Image 1 (cartoon, chains in turn brown, yellow, orange, green):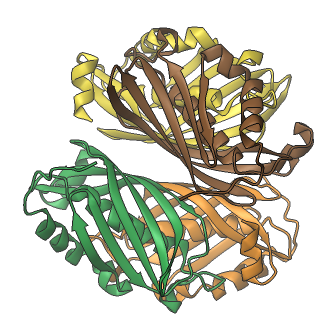
Image 2: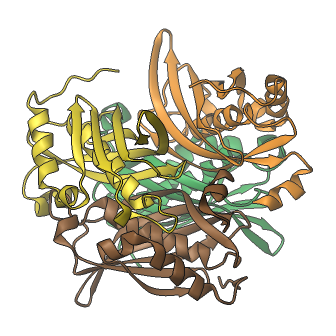
Image 3: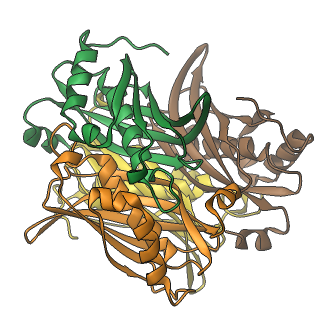
Length: 154
Length: 154
Length: 154
Length: 154
């Protein structure tokens, strides 16, 4: 399915918001690409972000899946809006082992208020790709007014 | 509901596993307490782990909720076992704003293979507590054999 | 936590909406009780609503969990509103075997737009109760205008 | 992705299990098709299974989504096995209005024990199709021994 973005400048808007997320710099996340209703976020393997077996922690897998999902949704929202995660569910399907992790998100249904997005996290080692997690998320569109006011809308 | 742990040394086992998770040191997570079927994990606010509004990123909220949930489940598993997250769902209910975040997990139903756990994340500022997220998770008990073998059980 | 309903006549409003759901008559569901942020729905065992092992089908367990969750949320909504399920996640924790099934829902966080509710389904046989399912759900408050218009708000 | 079924007679096995589910006859569900890792279940609109606006109840949408998801997973399981739903999450994305509802499920990752499946429910009216719900589910493979024994494996 193809979506027509309401805001022709969606990519700049998404990239500006991504740049404001301090976590992306702290963890080393990169916004690889953003399209109308899609977004890809990359994170190289980092041995300091692991669980007890040396796999990337499920919370880190979730972090990139959620960021990609949020910005896939945000790409279809109007210029004067903001996006917040309402909830998500994620299945951790295989050990998160790889050189790089890539979260690939795609909107399933955009809505005026709520948008449903799926995000897949792939572990990449050389040419080999393994899906390690699948997320189904609900994002909400808020007015872009100062954050404090906006969140009252919830 | 009260649970009888199969392994009387569950606390040492949980603490040893927590110590092996490199992410806890990287983010500054602390294992506050662990009981039979319960676990509390704390994380002080960290401005480098935020989303675009300056709230803690949903992925970080999820990280501590998942860690607490996993170890609450692990506390009831046998001595020679390991725990892995199968899946979880989390509602982000309020902006993650506070001095400290605490994830409080409690097993709802322990099983030989699968355990259902709920985890609540509370933002604490002085005396004030606000629930910012609620997770419902499924954990799996694996043999504690070398991780590579163990994950084949999935 | 105790909630103050915005509409003092919430019980009559919830019961009227429950009565409009044709499924309740078809399956034999009964609205046992409704309070501010709580709701209980009952369904006697019915051998015609089973899965392949003779347990109640997960979809039926879900039906009463969702109805109870929706009306627990609706009890705290304003008089001129309506409620629709946005999404839910449910763990089926034990075989749904019993004389009667009871879904017990309780609001965790009411919101102007979105409400988070948990719903537990218990199988009852004589004096014995077994929790068979746990749901975590998100409900949305819509204006009570004609349904067709209302749903555009999504 | 294409899957190779372990049991060449998977279709007969799935159809036999579907026939044992009394709910399918009670509601009027039909097993439209089953392939390796896929399953489609149909249900005509039924005014006696509705919620307060006259849409099909979310629990019924969930019932066919879950049945299709379970049998998509079961198609890839060994001959002497059985399938049970561990948990699922479903987004209700549009009012369930249509002449016929079709749940289309597809395995994302089959596992020896746990299988992750997605199921989409489409409302069909004449030529028009609308996605009304999206489910992400976890199914478990159990030995096909007498049900009572099998469920202890959980």
